[in-house]
Image (cartoon, rainbow, N blue to C red; front, side):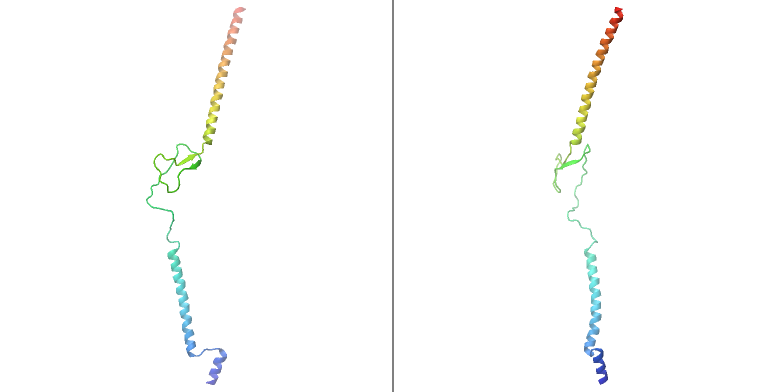
Length: 141
């Protein structure tokens, strides 16, 4: 018996009740850790990613597609998100620079056409005077 007690003290083996307690605690902690991990994964699964949520979305909102008669770059938006609008309200303004450039180009082409027509009228009058002068020259000879 003394040899057994001496052997237990050398190997560090615990006595009866302490050994029973450590042999019970270890499986409880291992199973408890696994259960805690499973519960944590379940809570994460319930809370994350399964359901899509958007903070600023609402249901049954009237959506209307807005289009202009002419295409262009939007220069100013006159309404804000969630603002109620009525028929005739200005929603946005288009940049008018491309339209002004086109108008200036058309005006310049009109002015050039007027100048061309005036020049043609003068050429016609000149040709008429030349024809009269030649006719007079032919009669005079």
